[in-house]
Image (tube, rainbow, N blue to C red; front, top):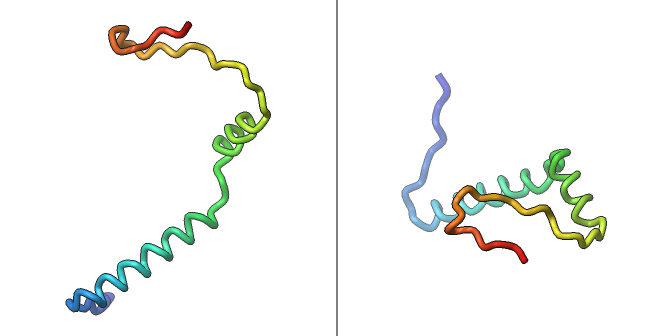
Amino acid sequence: MRRLPVISLDPMKFVQAFAAGLRAEFADAARAPLPEYLAALMRELEDGDQTQPASISCGASHLCVPKT
């Protein structure tokens, strides 16, 4: 059976270890390739087409603001 890592109960060491783990996870996420659907969306947004998108029905007419 695998041994669990030793966890310090010292508050400062815990916070430092937690911060290091967060930095590592965010660095991994930043290096990950962009999903194709998101890349396609970004290309579409960067095309410079300034036309308004089609009206979207939200299903709750009393909450929706009609487009003019």
